[in-house]
Amino acid sequence: MINPHVQLLKTFTYRKLIISNKELTLTLSKTITILNLPFINTTNQQFISNLQKKITTKQNTFIVTANPEIAVYAYDHPQFQKLVQTADYITPDGIGIIKASQIIQQPLKERITGFDTLTSLLEIANNSSLKVYLLGAKPEVLQKTVKNVKKKYPKLQLVGSHDGYFSDDQEIVADIKQLQPNIVAVALGYPKQEEFIAQHRQLCPAIWIGVGGSFDVLSGTVKRAPKIFQKLNLEWLYRFISHPSRLSRFKNLPRFIYLVKHVH
Ligand code: UDP
Image 1 (tube, helix red, strand yellow):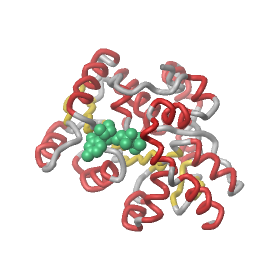
Image 2 (spheres, rainbow, N blue to C red):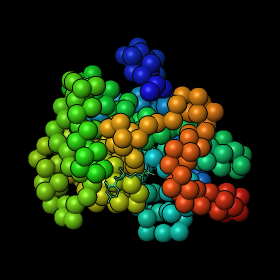
Image 3 (tube, rainbow, N blue to C red):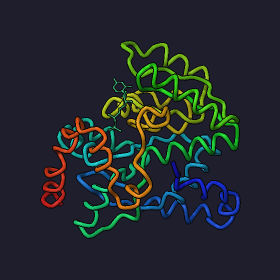
Image 4 (cartoon, rainbow, N blue to C red):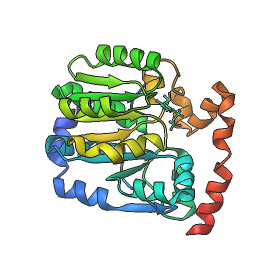
């Protein structure tokens, strides 16, 4: 699996010198609004540089990685939409969002996925021995995720984890409060993960990110699309071919495009 951020991270120290703070802030303050959600219009590289800065300065940061499904759900659920709008960053996770930006003639620079952002954050955590908390997925998937993360990122501190099938969050809340992780990755699927983060993000000044099905991939339970599918922006097609039961996930796409064309 090739992570487009890896090269960036390798050269991060150098790049840090040439991307000024002001430049970063300006880059990330520019957003493109699609279905009332302000998407950051930047590159993976600049986004990660910015997150590195947020970690260093211990700024509480809420990231929503939004695909068309989330955008439509937010459009239909005003309360959830408001909650998503409180995020510090909404990233375009999915070619559908990029296409929508082209339709409204305000093209976004590139796709910034939850999975790639998570693996970049894990690299950063590994390089600086940061504390990470993983929340979500089925117990056996989480167990494999923990094992793989420990193996691949031996220097990060995996301070805690909990599966995503709980009825009472008190234990998790107490854990996070006590452990004070630098990064909290929440893989409960939408809208649960964003609701959890919005409710609990004040527990510690971390990067809080909703990462959907990323633990399924990190655990090796689900394969990410081969590079060629990713390059051709056909990751969705690969997912559909390998899991036809996901067909229902695409049912909102035509409506998404319709709304994009008519709401703006
Ligand atoms: N999940 C969870 N708790 C729940 C519902 C879902 O931990 O109550 C997990 C599920 O096991 C999966 C992830 O959340 O690992 C959602 O994956 P999906 O592919 O549906 O998310 P997407 O990336 O499409 O948002």
